[in-house]
Image (cartoon, rainbow, N blue to C red):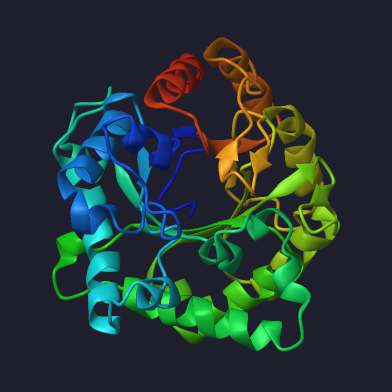
Length: 329
């Protein structure tokens, strides 16, 4: 990660893909969420990435968060179709990043805007909000199921002969529990993905010391440290309230024995997800100014990559990027 994001500067990550593509008139699939967008609305996928790059994003994240062989099979797509959709999402992100330009124009945008391949948690494919609890990771036989799930997807994501069709890093995100951290790391190693591209693991937390699974954030970081010794893995937090990010970053930093990890922060707006209605409870999130007011505190706490998660529009990312640019001067 340090080789991809050098010089101890701060980089801007993109924001919430799903609400941004919805603003273009796209209706999301009730189970696959954004997973069918590259099939039905490829141009809108590209436009969504472009919107974030124009807002200053140095990194765009693919629409693969909820993609899975199991999910596509439930909609009567075969494995070949599934792999095609996964690869197409990476291609669309690359296309969106190369056909846009952010505030830096001293060289072509392809060399500047990175494509992060989103590797969502197993709970995302269940479409029941369980990525906010991690309960599935404690069931009998869950570890082997999780390893297999992530391993198969990582194989599908790996670069083809067409170099332009590949990503720049893996964003293993919204991880709610320690068991899934272990499963993802195992899959990264077994698939050799960890040796092919930089990787970050981003944890989903309920407060500054606790994962969504009620496990210790400190312990999760220590497990990641132990299992990835010798690898330059980034560690982050996402899809949490902005109010808990600063102290959570300090918790991560204190548990981070290597002291040179790239740390990431990209919370949501502090809203609550209603799994039964499959929507965010309205009027409970913070506005753009309130969100951007946190950014300097996150930088001071050690964040090197900052963006947004659910419901953070390109306007939010533009405000984040403005603060980050002020710190670059």
